[in-house]
Amino acid sequence: MREEAIARVKLVFQLFDADGNGLIEADDFRLMAERVVAAVPEADAGRHAAMAGAFRTFWQTLAGELDSNRDGRVDYTEFQDIVLAPERFSAAVTEFAGALTAVADPDGDGLVEQSTFVAVMTAIGFSEPNILALFDALKPAGAEQASVPAWTEAIQEYYRPDAAGIADHLVAVPVS
Image 1 (spheres, rainbow, N blue to C red):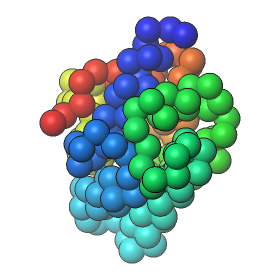
Image 2 (image 1 turned 180 degrees about the vertical axis):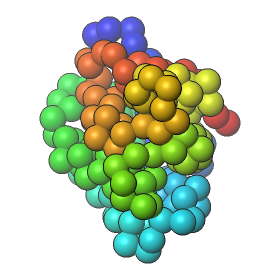
Image 3 (image 1 turned 135 degrees about the vertical axis):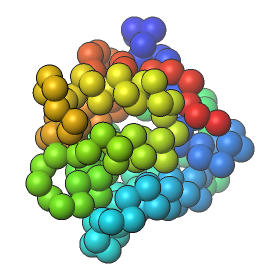
């Protein structure tokens, strides 16, 4: 496996462990959803609800596939299995990517403003230099907006551990 993929798996674990206790639990996904919803208060209740639902689905999928001892928590050893069969998570990732980009596009014009993009990605826990690098990679030259379809595709790519390209812009230490 590529070094970038290993770094991405470690980073994703750290991001999903939103409360920093070394385990991924349902409360971590609730906390991330609350942070993302708070980052885009102008989005309507339907978009907020879809985002929270996507986080719940993502957790339920992870727990169902990775929580081998069924204790309601996923530790890093269990989480590493995500790289063995990322296709098990594709439906949850697709729902998550769609809901995340939709909440960040409250007017539904298919474009995300840079300030909103940064706020959402910061709420998830990514570091600003990497957020800005990803935004620059997604936006057309000279634009101050990124397209929702391009961002959605980048999110889906990010959760495919062996994929390379735009997703690697986010491989860095998460914000603490």
